[in-house]
Amino acid sequence: MPVNSILGVFAKSPLKPLEQHIDKVHECASLLIPFFEATTSGDWDEAVNVRKQISLLENDADALKREIRLTLPSGLFMPVERTDLLELLTQQDKIANKAKDISGRIIGRQLVFPQPVQAPFKAYLKRCLDAVSLAKQAINELDDLLETGFRGREVELVAKMINELDLIEADSDDLQIQVRRLLLSLEADLNPVDVMFMYKIIEWVGGLADLAERVGSRLELMLARSS
Image 1 (tube, one colour):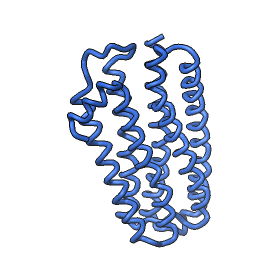
Image 2 (cartoon, rainbow, N blue to C red):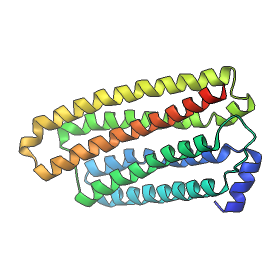
Image 3 (cartoon, rainbow, N blue to C red):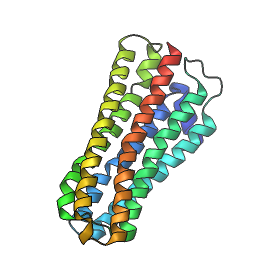
């Protein structure tokens, strides 16, 4: 988005660009579902195609992040700190970076999880992406929060979402343990280098939920400072 355009968006709503950024980040991370479906079915051409889409969306999010940093007004007349908004933006952006890293590593090694791990890993991935979706919903409430002066029922709604983010993150930790245990039971029959990268991918997927929770934590901090 050109700088002039984003300035126009800021003029209408100083928080709208952050919502646009998390929408792009969510779209990017969500592509990991079709990406892993392609890899487990052995369709590497499709996996590469989806990986390109992830990369393009990550680049779009990165460009949006830079423009927001350059154009975010320093004298915002609203009950939130500029530094809090920029930190929120940084955490959001890391989600897209992580999605790109995951897909890149999988493509680079043509890595496929063993068949018994695939279903539990898919459930784990989806739960981590639930956290990203909820972070997106919470950020998309920013405009309404601004309209209500960061008070009232809107604050309660966002606080509820933040609590739910914590629960999802805890769920994803439990699912990660299950996936790791299953992989451990199989690793004696697998390429040890592949196994090492599989554990890394499992950790990075969990990082998506961790980062989404951090978005919620930064939002919670903003609410606390604005009350």
